[in-house]
Length: 242
Image (cartoon, rainbow, N blue to C red; front, top):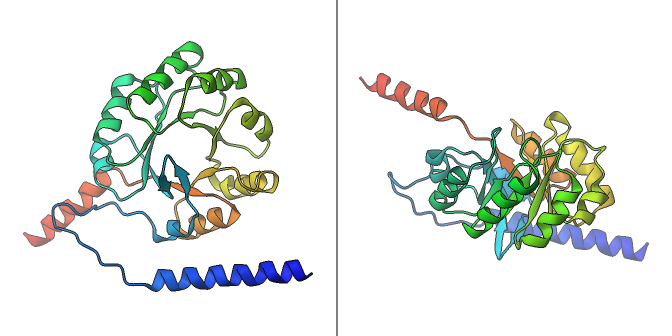
């Protein structure tokens, strides 16, 4: 009981210190042309983050749009798309991004040696990690682990996934994308693996992000508005000024 009380006191001290830190004034310098129009939800900053190669990553923007990738304040980019991964797309995203990029290298339709070759190319071009689709066989993960010196991230879509076999195969980070069940899946992973790194989708509302972080996610992925949606707001502003 003494130990429990002590832990409780420590947690309260951590919470209090976080509140104090969050209230500190942060000087901000921006310009009209260089400010980032796509801002990450403030709730994300309550996440612990994942330290990858010396960079602490709490927020990731889910996009392959080069203009959006260049105009946001996320800590990193997760570039996964529903087509066969192409070296030219991966290279363009890595070159233009000012933050770490984690690129999709297949694992479903695109698999085997092709996925391995794409992953090696991604590392050589500067990717911070590779993202594998949910159907990826453990044998491919193990083979990739032997060849890569960057994290292998596996997408998790169900709490029925065999988490232990994925870790044993060489996965470094779980990327939970379970729709409305995301927080539930994160919680299931956290119960078995208290310290394993977890990235998870944030959902459409701030309360979804908070719930997912409280469930145990270390970093949150945000899907930004489309270029068309952003342009619509600007055009409406222009029209109102005419």
